[in-house]
Length: 108
Image (cartoon, rainbow, N blue to C red; front, side, top):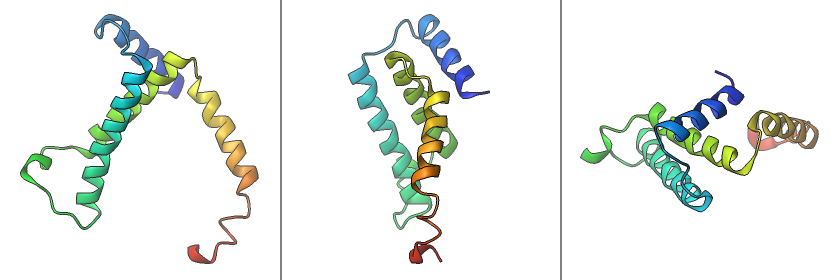
């Protein structure tokens, strides 16, 4: 599935099963919440924290998908074409950082 297809699919789901979009501010808050849930799993899986019983049912791919879902909602609500935005972002990073990381002593 392409990013554009994902945006369309989320929009279709929202307008049928989901009834309507939550407000942009609500979705921004939900995005923050979902990133926090992802961070919790990352900290426990790859960091130094131990899992709590309530964390054991959490699924890393599902939490990443939750973050993507809400981001797609926000893009749809604000009229952002994420394919174009990502392409422009690659161009920006390629121009700005073309030598930056190769010259970074910390990465060697």
